[in-house]
Length: 222
Image: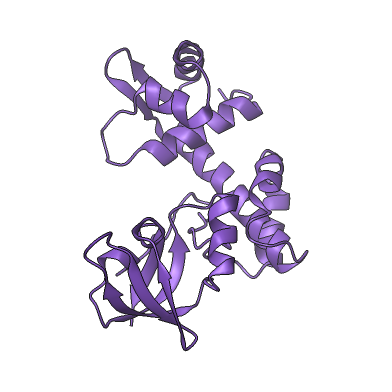
């Protein structure tokens, strides 16, 4: 029996999926509460509702896991979110730091026909404007291959920026000021022992970035 899923429930399922780092390992209610900025007691109530709908497996003190049905809904929501981000950037000329909140609203549109046509219209993109992989209509997702964080790269190595671990507006604006964007070719010149800050070269210009920034840049070695 198919249950109606509201916006709040979709957000919970998406959050659980994002927090699930390892197979067969439950996500704590406290982690979900922190992710969604809500009370742990509210999370517990919601987990009971989602469990009744067969979307999560929940046992007190053992954490929460998505069922196959719950995971498919989470991935479909993520798919819609990331496709809308591509549309907003590529077709409406939004900046990559402006699209998250709008896509949060658009991701709850329930029409699968609209989503599929949007995917075709955009040319079946594999990644969103932040470099995050877009699930296909079957919920299959293509993750990065042979990538590192910039902070893990060896001195002297060349790489291409393919994604960001932090997609917050403030971080993306900071990257733009440093002329760092997806597709940028980077050479790691030096890592300073004192604070682990990095000296890099981008578009023939040498600049310094903090270790915190480097920890949030996903790169593919060249």
